[in-house]
Length: 426
Image (cartoon, rainbow, N blue to C red; front, top):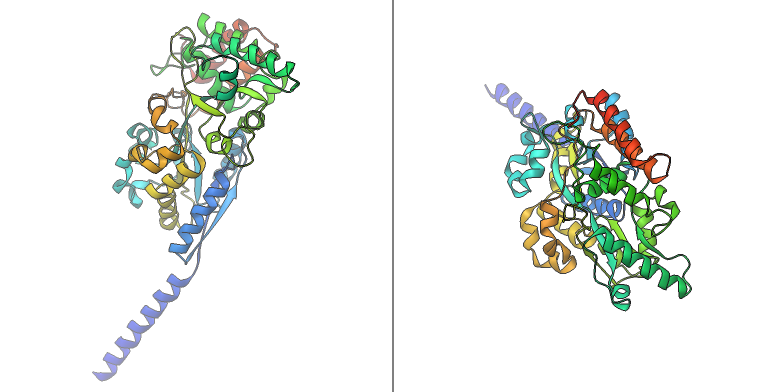
């Protein structure tokens, strides 16, 4: 009897020691994130805070390409190999429908308790077949940045239409060059052939009653007179109020020119706000933001952007990876990102947080812009959205580079989209 009890105690002791030993083994988690603006730096800071609270976890933040198409290409290589090398992926708002098969359902890892804190539209966007494949992290919408000092000097107001923007850009550009700054331009934006141009061009179309490329009812609408009109107008900016090189610009190219004091207007995302007011900025305290200008529709349009966090189905430690993702997307972490880097929270209550509004006042004043942003047709065209967007931005780029007229480019695009998706033109 005594021998049996001793053996039992020894067995329990071994199990306890085994459990402690297993728990003490470090868990390595790799998070693939972006490096636009302050993204990489503040992601590493969030990782450090998590590791301080969880000494048994080591987080490596992986720097991925800035260009969305390049980043997606890298991700697809990992997915094709079913690689466990990356545990958490930073996912564009347009990807959940296309990539859902590679991610776990975060509702099974604690997301049910926090999902209702986030914008319901984004949660819905990230839900595929009832599974939450991505937790919202930060949201985006296109904004117009403008130099307050120069508009005041030249007796101008922030433009509300594209025509007003053109007039102001020409006037100030001529004036600044006459004062000796030959590098000054009126308007910078994202003109390279990539997803950023899809965002810019969708804003042009929507602001001019030119549709949304493919409508929610599944009809292809891009080939219409209003779309032709606004694309021809945008092509006219290249080399006049925008530098010839704008056809190769991404977000950071536009920011560098604007933040260096060499542009009056800029189309970009909210992250540029805190950087523009940084100690190394030539325009700190000399700019503000407003909604993008309107075309024939009478109101401006902003493309919905933003990023989510998804946990790989191939992760060796999905439970820990999910905990890391939920921590990164938590109230306090989203607040830190909003204050440090002007990244718009997806947690609704943060838009009433005094510290957030003090750091980035536009988050309160332009709240309607963010909640009414125009969505890209990623859901209706899934799982072919990436191909749809590629066809679209290449068509637009051909117009900007004068290789094609807008009428010809959109007619050809319509046929290509029909062939790709099987959908019909409106």
